[in-house]
Length: 342
Ligand code: RIB
Image (cartoon, rainbow, N blue to C red; front, side, top):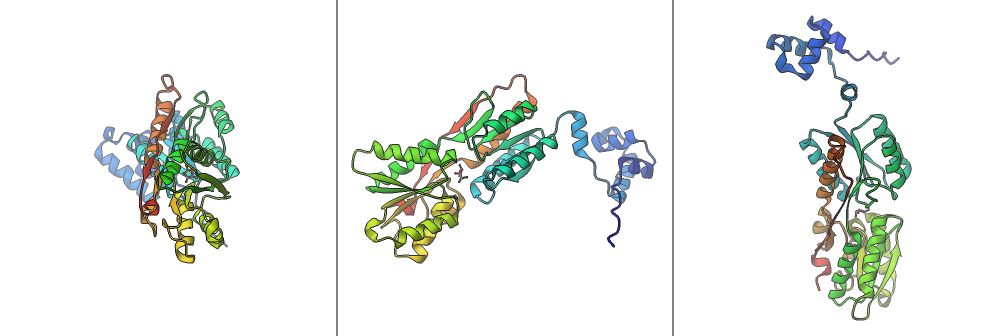
């Protein structure tokens, strides 16, 4: 029979064991410099002996404002989001805040569960890289008085702050780079297109091909995921085609897809990169440079996206009366490596 769990020691238990008042224990916890050293020592010993852990959530609620932020990212397995979350966490620590991180895995129900959890915990605010347009989510949270900032997606200033990268410009950069190599049969690999980031990248690449002063085409190979496995599956299908049907350049919607394509080409087929097919990705995660063929990519300032989101959220929490919602859009950067070097 499992033994009944002992109740957590309370602040009353600490006061009783140390032989002091509740107020003295509270002072030792919150303002130890106001308490005689001997008393601090006595209370500290009682806390350690009992294994007392303060209920910071209740304390912060009493103070009216939590120093904890909630953060939900689309896919924590994607290094782009782990670097973004790290940038946010470093900025939060500098401002005296902590972050509780959740992963939606591109699933709206999981995202909603985390948003509800953070709201019930009365966090100071929420940062979200949303599965969808996020308009409804943000409006609902605001209506409940919850501060929220959207990252990796652009939203209307009327409903809140957002920090993102100009993915249309990024897509155009990628395609223009491939065209500059003399490649003429481009293939965009990525999806689903209800990810605005992916749709914008394709749109930018399509515009580059349309305005190209020469003959070039761009096709779209839709995927249901933005993962290494999805990239490998597409790579296998392309490699199985007759060589005459291969594209001569691939723009992958993100680096994970591109890494999967490289694995399929280099390990399981005769496709040479960049000789037969030049490949460029998006994000410039650490695996891009370390890939079997160092991968060209369109760099997003992931850590900066995260730290900027925290700065805007903390400003909204601490200076609500003067805060003005704004949209911050960073520009992407072309990084050229072996996978597109003629
Ligand atoms: O979540 C899919 C992609 O969107 C990531 O790789 C990153 O590019 C984000 O903007």
